[in-house]
Length: 166
Image (cartoon, rainbow, N blue to C red; front, side):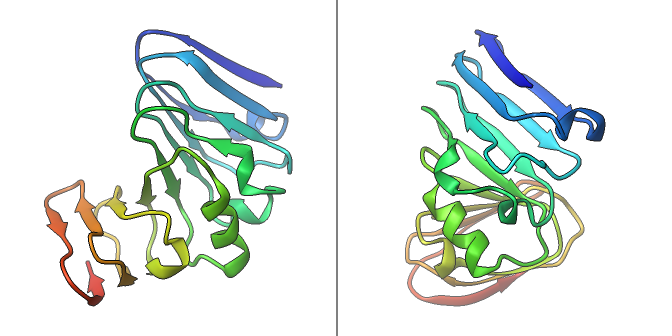
């Protein structure tokens, strides 16, 4: 099953568990308004692909989803400022390699209690705290990185910062 998203408006939707097991592709390349996709359950298609729009896109994955995907290059955010949302409580080296291989994404969204080594995701300099009232520790941030608490504040990171905990 494929989802093809077109038009000039933004679209936000949640993939229910009953549909997600058959979903192999989301193609929003003909959309200009941006899409936000939430996966409530794990994708079961190892070759799942995502092609984002020319707007700002977000695709949020269930915990450990990147272990299911064959390769991260299956994910392309398209144009715009795009985000990969994580619901993981930890990011393994295998998951980090796949996240690093994704193209066209500029931000990582954090949606679970997590301790994250930002150096494992060195392609990303913007980390968004998307879900309130969680404990998120991010360490080994690169110079110029920003952590944005989308619930309350924005914190620019200058120089060497080892850990920021919320």
